Length: 567
Image (spheres, rainbow, N blue to C red):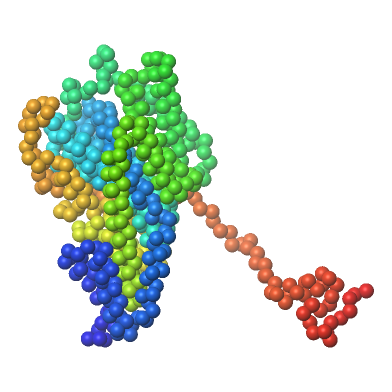
C-alpha cells in the first residue's frame, strides 16, 4: 500500500481534490485542506522534506505583494459603479430605438450594448443583471421568443469575460506568468469576432424565424423628428464621416503599428470627429443633425471615452493594467457624479461587493498556492507533463484534449476555479510543446466563457433567473398579461450561444492570427552580428593598472619581485 501511495501520489492527490469539491466544500478550503493533508502524508512517508512547508509563508507574502492583482478590485469597482449610474439604461434605450425598425433590432441592441459594457466593466454579473432588468421586459412586451431573449441577454453579458478589461484575463496572465497587457491585446480581436458571430445568429433567426424577433411597433419608437421621421439619414452621414476619418488616420500610421492599438486609436479619432460635429450642431443650431444623431452621439461618447481611458492607455503603453483600472474607477465615479447618481448608498454597495469578490479571489489563490506547493513536491507537474506530451497528434492533439477537458469541467467549476486549479498544470506543458502562452491563455479564456452558459450550473443563467419574471404579470404600458419566463426556456436559449462559443474556439485554433494579430510585430534577433567581449578578471585589472602607472608587475606582487619604474 505504501509503495502504491508513493508511486501514484500525484494522481491520488488530484482525485482527492475532486472528491472534496463534489462533497460540496468551498473551493478555497478544499484546495488548502487537500494540499496540507497530502503534504503531511508525504512527509510521513519520506517523500517530502519537513522543511517544505516553510516555503508557504514566502508564497503567501508573494501573493500579497503582487501588484497585478490590484487590477481586480479596480475593475470590479468600476463595473459596479457604472451598473448603477444609468449608463446601461441609456445605451439600451438609445440603441434599441436606433435598431427598432428592423427585425431583431432589440437583440442587436442588447449584443452591442453587452460588448460596450464588457469593454468598460469587465464584470459578467453587472452586465447580465443590468440588461436583464432593463431589456428583458421590453423584449417580452413586444413579443420576442423567450428562449431567444434569454439567450441573447446571458450570452451578451458573458462578453465581459473575453473583451478587455476582463477579470479572467488578469487571473490567467498571473497563472501563466505573462503580461496582462499582452493578454488584453491578444483577446481584443477575438472578443469582437465573437460579438459578430452573435449578431450573425440573430440575423439568421430574423430570416428564418421572423416571428421570434419582431421589430418595434411604430408607437414604441419615441425618438422622432417633428415631421414624424426617425431621422436616420443624418446619422448615416455622421457615421460615414466618422468611419472615413478613422480609416484615413489608420492609413497614415506605419505598417508596424500593432492592430489593437490601430483599432482603438482610430475608433477614438472617428468618435472625436462625430462628437465635434454634434457639439457644433447643437451650439450653432446648424440643423445638420437629427435628434436621433445627436442622441446617439452624446450617449455613446462617455462609455467610449472610458474605454479609451482604460484600454487605450494600456495598449499605447502609457499605463499598466493596474493603473488603467485605477483611472477607470475614477472615470466611473466622474460619470456617476455627472448623472447625479453618486451618493453614499451607491458607494457603500459598490465597495461592499468589490471587497467580497476580491476576498473570494484571494482566498482561492491562497488555497491553490498550498495545493500547488505539495503537488509540485510530489512531482505532480512531471506526471501531468508526461500524460499530456504522450498524447497522439502533438500540439493539435494536446489542444483538443485540453479544450474538451476545460469544456467538461466548466459544467461544475466556474472560471476562477478553473484558472487556479487547472491552468497552472497545463501552462508548463503547453510551453514545452512550443505553444505561445499568450495565445493559449486567450484560447482557454474563450473556452472557459462557456462555464457561464452551461446548463444547469452557468452563473450567467443564475443571474438572469434572479431578475427574470417568476410569475405572470401585467405590463404597465400595454396593460396586457405577460407570461413568466421559465428556467427551461433560459437553459434552451443558452444552447445556441454555447455552440457559437465552441465554434469560436475552433476559429482561434484554425486561425492563430486572430490572437497574434493584436500583439504587433516583434523584432527578430539577428544572431549573425553578435560580438562577445570578455570581461577582465581582478588580476587582469591590476595588471592594466600597473601598466597605466608604468610598472611591469602588478602592485600586489611580492616586494622582491617588484621592478623599478621605467626610465
